[in-house]
Length: 120
Image (cartoon, rainbow, N blue to C red; front, side, top):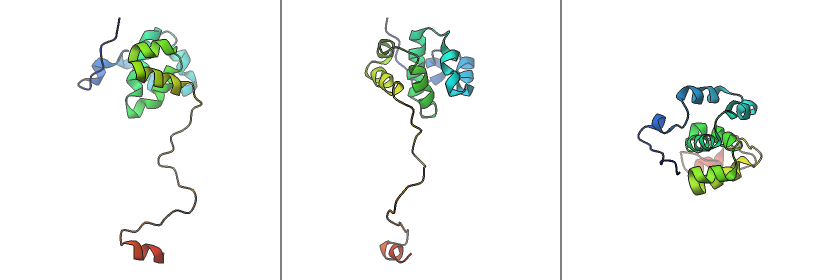
C-alpha cells in the first residue's frame, strides 16, 4: 500500500506522527534519536524522515531518523527521494557550511564600484 502524497496546504495534516511526538523529537539530542524513534513502526519512521527532510529547519533531523530505516522502507515512502535520503543517512554527518567565514584571500567587494575597492 502506497502512502498518500504530502501536501503543502496543511503541513500538520501530513505529519505521520502526533505533533507532540514531533515536538519531543525536535528537543531530543542527536545521539538519543534512535532510542526515541525505536517504538515507531519503520514505515511510519520512513514517512517521518521524508516529511522532516523536506523542510529546511528539520532537514538534519530527517536524515538522522532516516538512519534508523532500511533503504527499502525509505524507497517505498518516497521513491527516488527515499533512495537519496538513505544514501545521505549513511554518510558521516557534516555540519552545514553556509554562513561560515571564508578562508583565503578573495576579492574585495565595494558598493562604490571597482576603483574604490582596489584602494582599500
